[in-house]
Every structure is written in structure tokens, then in C-alpha cells.
Amino acid sequence: MPDIKDLIDRLQREAHPTIGGKVYDPRATRPRRRLMDEAASALSRLEKENAELREALRPRSMETAPKDGTSILIRFEHPNYAVARDDDKDRWAEICIAYWLDHNGGGWTWHGIVGTATCWWPFPALTKESIDAKG
Image 1 (tube, rainbow, N blue to C red):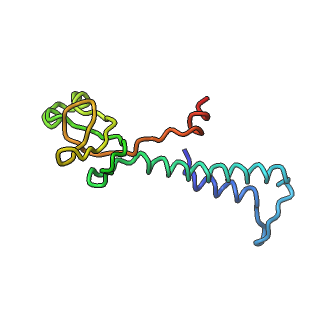
Image 2: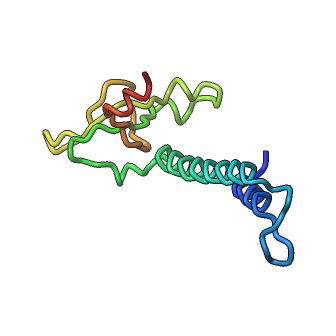
Image 3: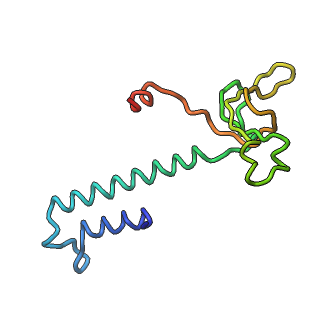
């Protein structure tokens, strides 16, 4: 699979070929150039969205987790996780919806596996637009 940036570059060069530094190609009709420009633009937009999604899915350190009651996703590891075989580790870790509670000195509150919080992700917010988009 070609690199997206390389593909965008090639589409733009093909849409606007040059001869002697001037854009010229009798075969490059306007509809062809327009289609290639639109494809390059769509790929650029998708590349940016992909980078934003990768960032959103990146696990974050527990030291940075919000302690203001905001619901987040936290990965918890049961003490058995440390000694479990590689093919058995999945049953000793779980991602749960959790939030910080200030009661009795503060702590994380969640329903799920007993264990230590290892990393977190923002909890995806449901908006009218995101619900409507799913039909």
C-alpha cells in the first residue's frame, strides 16, 4: 500500500504536469485535473482525520487523568495479570468507565475488575450529530 503523502504528491503532479517548469499537458483535460485535485484533497483530509483518531486512541498516563468527576475509560489490571501466561493475560485486564470521587480522600470509582489503573482514554462524548450520523 503506497504512503498517503506520496500518493497525494503523485496525484497532484499527474493533475498538473509540467514541461520546462510550466504546467502543460494536452492530455490533461479539465475534468481529469479536477478529479485528481478532488482525490488529493480527500486524501489530505482523511490523513488529517486519521492522525486525530490515532491521537484520540493513544493511551494516556494515569498522572494526567482528570480528577474532577469527568467519566473516562480506564484500563485496570488485576494482580494476577503480572503472573499470568501471555495467552491468559486478557482475562486479567479490563477497560471500564470510571470517574474520580473526592469522598474519603478521593479515588477512582468504577464497576468491573478489581485491580490497578494503568492508563486512560477520554470517554467518547455522545452528541446529537454523532447519534444522527449513525442513523
